[in-house]
Image (cartoon, rainbow, N blue to C red; front, side, top):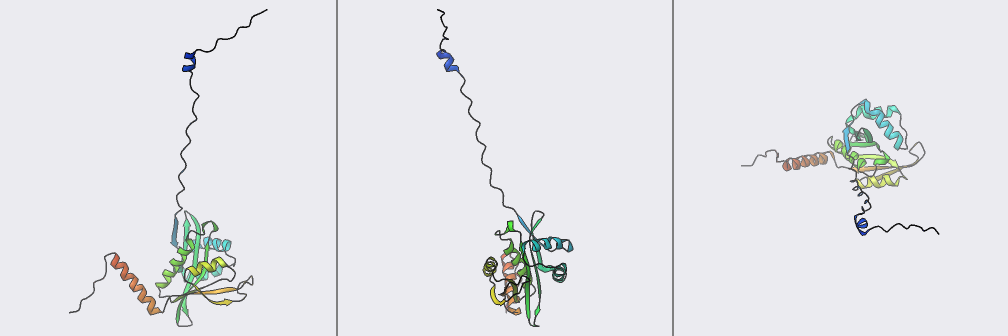
Length: 218
């Protein structure tokens, strides 16, 4: 009967010198959160901006405008148009006008305000409106008006936060037969606006240590 050979058990030395199983590599550290995207605001730079404005308005707003409507506003009131950029991409715009209404009231009109959907809720529209109104006030604007769809709850809420109030309902105002609300932001009389502007300039000068000298009484 053939005998089978059983291999000897490994020595204790061999067991103690056996290489341990390699440990897995450490996990890479978590990525830092992406830096917030910087939004840059610029004034209307000329006709080269018109295609960008048209793209923003035609894509994001329900009311269509023809090329001559844009030219009407941008030729006569270029100082009341502002652009918002993320890098080289135009992500927002505001187009306005300002004129004397009924021979007595210096009125600003917000004609178009559009922000790309991906950039809403980031304060872009609010900043654009404030830029435009600040420019209007520098020309003694007494009130600002606009129209928005009566069923656009988010737009109504947005303008209410900025201080606009409902002035009247305009029935079948849009080409799609929807009603609109005319909203108004009172800014005061021309004298009040000028006094407010002078006060703001004085406060700014005081903060910067550049207040103009005031003659003292004897």
